[in-house]
Image (cartoon, rainbow, N blue to C red):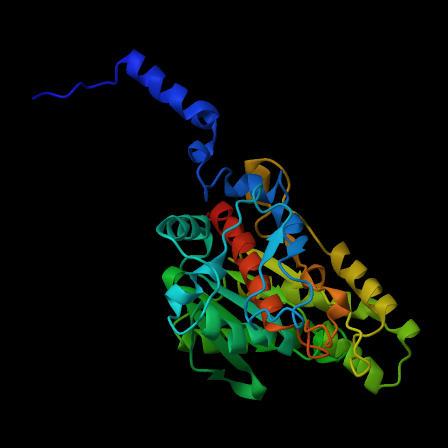
Amino acid sequence: MRLAATVPPVVLACILAALGGRAGSPCFGQHPCTSSNASERLSSRQCARTLWYGNWENESVYANGIPSMFNSFTPFSAVECDLADVCAMASEVNPGVRSPFKWTDAQERYTLERLQGVRNTLWLTVGTSIDHRMTRVVCPKVFGNRKQDLLGKAGTVIDLCTFDPLNFTLAYTFTDGLGSTADALTFSARASHLADVQRLLSDAGYWAGPTFLTISGMEWDIKHWIDSGVPPEKYPFASATLGARLLINAAHKQWPRLKSVSVRNVYETHSPKSILGNSSVMRAFNSLIAAMEVPFASGQSRVQHQCSQSVLIANMAALMRQGGRREAGWSDGLHPASWVTVQYVNLMMNILSDVGVVCQG
């Protein structure tokens, strides 16, 4: 029996009528669904900025017994920015993880498609112990498999962890500040450090180096200034931003094919023993960091042109609640609680994926 090559118009009209308003909507109104492209999300929708603002499932995490790794965060722009939730994949990647999120075939297809821009890439963070928790604690327990640490000269250490479904590797190496030491303010010293980092990465099989780079280290600048007896009102913030720009320039020289550079900001915490307890210091520091942002402009050609020039803000400060108070479970007085780091990694993967897709050339 031969089947009709086309659907008769009357039948097609009946099908569309049955679908109602869903017929003209993305994915016929089914969720999860990708309703935009990477260029739109980066430029006109400005998702690299907006995804950091939203609501936590629970603001009183100790009082309500939220599991240590999972406290769901929903950005206000989650639908507009087609957010993929990698957290839901935790139990699939690591069966030993007891994730409260439900994982379906539809979510898997959506997540792997939405995050295709980070497939087969390396995201390097040059930062502090706040960032180290991504590779040391969160990634091996939730996202992937921790690899052997790499040890180079002059104390350079790189920590690696890979999210296997996407072959996406998170890497971390330490810096003791952005602008409070002589080395931080010397281009040749920065370049030498990054060259050592690349030698270690090459030995581990990452010959091309990182695709994405995030820098931080401001916590150690503040520590150095405190140890030197500098009062908060005289902190030389300008030296930290100068050092950050030196580090970015050295990174572009070492890795000319970098698709993205981002700067993580700092968050206030009310712990009396914390070096980050001065709200005016935090606001001043973060305002200077925000001024470093070079967002992607509207228009496909302009977005691609800016791939090597953009500077994004990794806005961890926006994720924190209750001043990062230890008593409320949001930190140990300095480092973010695990669920904050989980959501930080999740949001960054979504943002970096868009950059990876747009900047393929």
